[in-house]
Image (cartoon, helix red, strand yellow):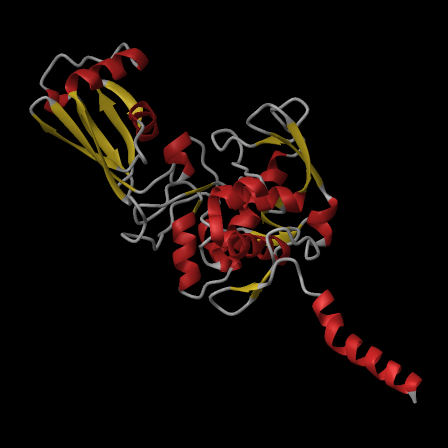
Length: 328
């Protein structure tokens, strides 16, 4: 009888206490659509392709870190796109980032590393600890969303005629993207202008820069000493050539022909979609959108995802004539 009672108590303990021992250190959270999201440091869902490929990343401090492709992509998406974006937009960003990495393989410009963490050169990258600090109490939710985007697109890339594309992306477009030919003088069949649905919901979608005529003259003289800015200010910028989106393709500054991108870089404008007005000794540049304008618009991708488009739809829209395929 005593032995039977002991056995009964043991069975009762196992029934009620064992589930408590199996609880995760970090609880699962849920996204807006009800899908389960993985905790920030969860690794069990890493795909077989991304989890087995290693990437060496040159960090901002000059050190080189060895990461799995899955961990590297997590850090790129965390750095490059707001983690609050729709899951399908995050997936599209993940595939674009994976494709960009693949297109750089074997042609590294960095000794001892495959790729760097500088967005001006390659792709931005952020560590999980940095991301957790940035996200605060949203860290588990946001980290899980990105982990899900990486896992659910494991090994997928964008190709054109069987080869990985230059999967360029930027923040927001002024109604449409820009043909690569207009920005860099080199045409690529999959980087052509397409409509982009984002708009006034984008933070700082419209911005202004006001500088004095003296400041403008000094900036131009330093980079383009041949420019003649001695006449009326209203004539300093002339012969504008605009893309359908409103992006400046070419413009003459003091008689010197420049691309809109050169003017953007010279003045630190958010994009090359600009116009200028003059009032007295001040010049005001009115700017729409953010980024170089070629390839996938991130805010446009999010708008498409809200419309019910999948990551495949998004990538196929922004990269004309491409396919989403698995890494060979």
